[in-house]
Length: 257
Image (cartoon, rainbow, N blue to C red):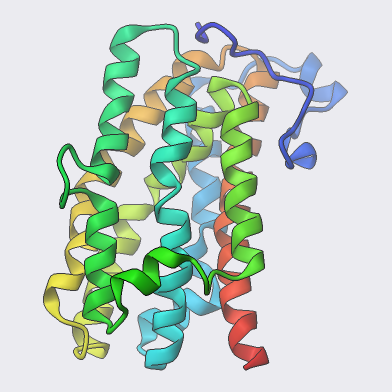
């Protein structure tokens, strides 16, 4: 059963079109667990940002140092908000065991002590690419489109049901494969970036696999009706759009330069 508060709110948090629920869907029978899983997995398979032209060029080795630095600077704005959105999700849970489990995601990015965690490792990536930590932290170079995309995702997690907020995190299902591709691309094409800078990508392979499996189990258990299943699929599609929009902003800034 969904946790307390898992009904769909009337406010969409910037994602009104992402509910995907129609009168026909409301009248439909729930998908079987296998079909529901297949529909969820199909979303990142078709819409994950590994297909975005900017990521394609990155993995082909076609980015200039300036383009790569622009991406690192702007993606950091997303990275530093990951524990924020996870704290908002955690606050929706009424089960202490589930809160303890989800807390691990915050610790993965913030660390348990200073100098640890994914945010620290992303700053090491920035340093390896020649970006000063103060420059990265300042956020002065974050593009408006990136801010809008990240704000939209954080607000989605703040305003939507636990089911939808957790379902949006299922992009983790596709992340490990992209991290492996990215590591190989950096080692082959961007050797000017020090090897220590790739630690973030290496760690996310295992973390992403674990987090994706955990979130999928929750979504399958909570979405007992067809409208809830539709809402979960739509939430995942919305998250894919957030990541795609972020890269749109980064790429278009290069076109204007």
